[in-house]
Length: 324
Image 1 (tube, helix red, strand yellow):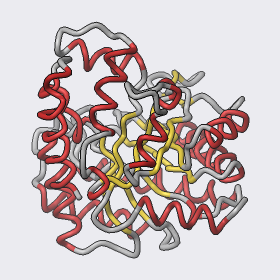
Image 2: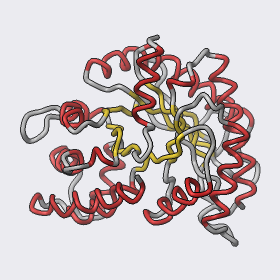
Image 3: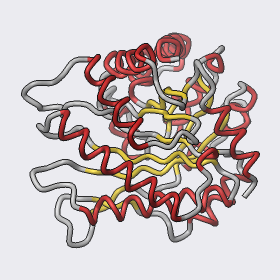
C-alpha cells in the first residue's frame, strides 16, 4: 500500500470548489435514462452521452474526478482515445465502480447486501492498469418498520471495509458509500439514528481491517426526511442534522465527504450542499459525488442527437458550477 500516493489522490479529489461526477450507471440503469427520451439502450448512445460530458470545455474547473462503469472505461471515444485518457487530458481523475450491485440478503426479507468481493483484487489490479485511480462501492440500507436489522448493517459494513482494504492494496482510493435510502415515510429523526448507527459500524469495520483513512473518501446520504414523509423538513434543518451526524461519526483523518444526491432533485441536492458549507463543516472537505443531480438536465438537452452536444455540455457545466 503506497500511502502517500493514496493520500495525494484523495486530496486531489476533495480539493475545495470541485466534486465528483458519478457517471457509473449500470447498463440497465442507463437504459432507463435513455428510455425517458424514447431511445434504445445501445452502447453507441451510452458512449456518446458520456463522451459529451467528459469533453465539456472547462469541466475541470468544477469536477475533480469521474466514476465510470466497466463498459465506459473500456470504450474508445469517437476520436479513438480511451475514456480515461480523455479525462486525464482534461485534468480530471478517472475512477471506477467496482461493486456487483445490491442483492437480497439471505434470511433478511427486504434487505440487501452488495456483491463483488470474490474477484475484486484481480479487477482492481486491471482497473489500475486501465487508468483508474479511485473506485467506489455502494451499500444499501433500507429503513422500514423493523428495518434495518443489525445483521444487515454489520454485513454491509464488513463488505465496505473488505473492499476498501483490497482497493488500497491495489493503489486505488476507495470511496466508501453506505447509502441509507430515503424511500418510505420515515422522519428525519429516524434517518439520523440509522445513519449514525451505520456510519459508526462502518468506521469500526474500516479500523478493524487497517484501512488508511487519509487515503479514503466517504460518500454518504444526507440526513433527510423520506420521500413520502408527512412533514418534510427544510433545507437548513437537513444541513444542521447532517453536519451533527457526521461530526459524531466520521474521523477527522478522512479528507473529504462527497455526498450522494440519493433521489433528490437537482435543485434540492445543490441547496442542501450549499447550506452545509455556508453553516460551516468539520475537518473534512464537504462536496458532491452526484449522478442524476449533475446529468439530468444535460441528458434532456442532448436528447440522443449529436447536434445538441454543445447544449448538453452547457447544461452539465451549469449544474457543476452551481455545486462546485
